[in-house]
Image (tube, rainbow, N blue to C red; front, side, top):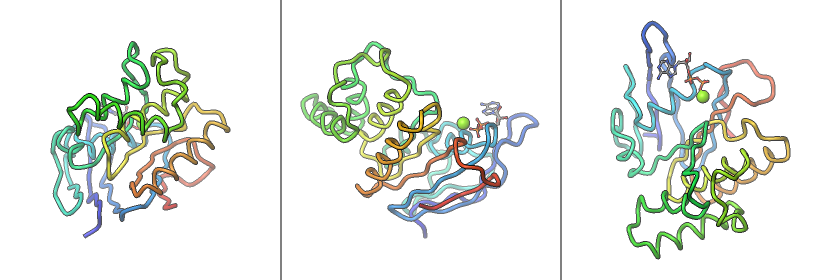
Length: 207
Ligand SMILES: Nc1ncnc2c1ncn2[C@@H]1O[C@H](COP(=O)(O)OP(=O)(O)O)[C@@H](O)[C@H]1O
Ligand SMILES: [Mg+2]
């Protein structure tokens, strides 16, 4: 069985079929891109995988376990974490404190949590912004912080929802570099994006 497998999941909102019979699988260490225009159902697929709501049909397997319908915290505990298309950090908390929120998921000791957050800060190259309150960050730095918060939970599978949307080309390049660096740590990455070179949607690409 694959490391991560989605089998025929669907979701209806009233009369609208947002996701229709989606299937794919991933092996450890892969980066898989899911590309589609706005409204294609990408975020809805993430919401089902991450447990925000269950699929109407189909099943999701992770590390050989059926995780369909589990709650978000149980799924996060198993090693799947997602970022949000619209990042909403705790505005009055610093960058460091926001990352600590993620680190508290596994660790309840404040000193160790801070050490974990410091390590992540360095990894995402935001050491110099550690004391900046999140509401003062640029869109691109907010996306970086969102990634940092997710990484601090020590995920095995990272779901990235449009992390380069709104970024300029230089910021987008920096984000792609960071994503490969995360993969090189052994973390598997599923990334959805509508900001992509022209293709025939829907399309999936392994990198
Ligand atoms: N919670 C919801 N309730 C009702 N309709 C929704 C909900 N979430 C998404 N939709 C609808 O489902 C479709 C797919 O949305 P979404 O998954 O956000 O697409 P994408 O992320 O690809 O832009 C859209 O038509 C959207 O309006
Ligand atoms: Mg979306």
